[in-house]
Length: 344
Image (cartoon, rainbow, N blue to C red; front, side):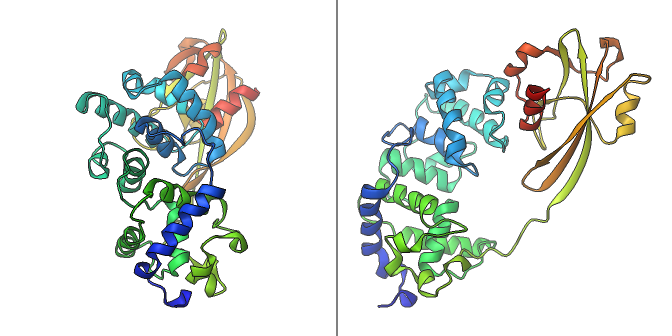
């Protein structure tokens, strides 16, 4: 049977065994969230690793565990404390869901994570793939994951022509992922798929010559493995421009907390305005120093941030909270503001 005609059913035994054997010899084994069946540690890593590279997550993961060793410790923290520790990691809805999930585990489940993927999915911020990863790694449940790396590996393996922008096609790939599960060793198999996607079957430069499943890969057989996965719907990037007022008064900086929804929800920033005239109008007659503009790329748009700095009395401000510079570390500041303050 050639790769072009292979089906998930035909691949099941050989593919699973090959992935497990490869992971045992060549996969990743030293990441701090591996070699544990503690669902708190696995869950924490899975949430942090969503849309974020391992090298970035490592430091955050260790700091979170040092401060909150158990899920009940995290549940007892305030959201502001969690956001402050998360600052710079991005996609802040993950941090809010992380806190909500910890509280749900503590209050509804006695501090113990549910043991099945189906139950785990009822918790805030835990989707199907994350639930499956926790269930497979911690409780040996035979259930498939389908994160970004695994979608790429399986799409290329099967030359899956479904458009993953379609929920129908994604559901079909979920079914294929389930069909490919080995009868045993699902935890090592799951880790193997993650490792293949992260280190071999990468998005831009797949290392096909060293891939253990290359002989059975339909995508490789076509000579164009990078055609997969197929996802036609692309987000149209926008552009946004705002002005910050950096006001200081006797060693204190004026901060305002962002609304509970939207970009940087719940984080603390400098007072923000839609245009320069509005920013200047907040301090009539003040001498404002213009700082170099910041260009910050978010998922859906590029954000240009202008900053104007001045010394100001608390009676001359647009409102907010005065914070001593030495205590800013305790506040959840977005990455570009944190960098701006550190460098100024």
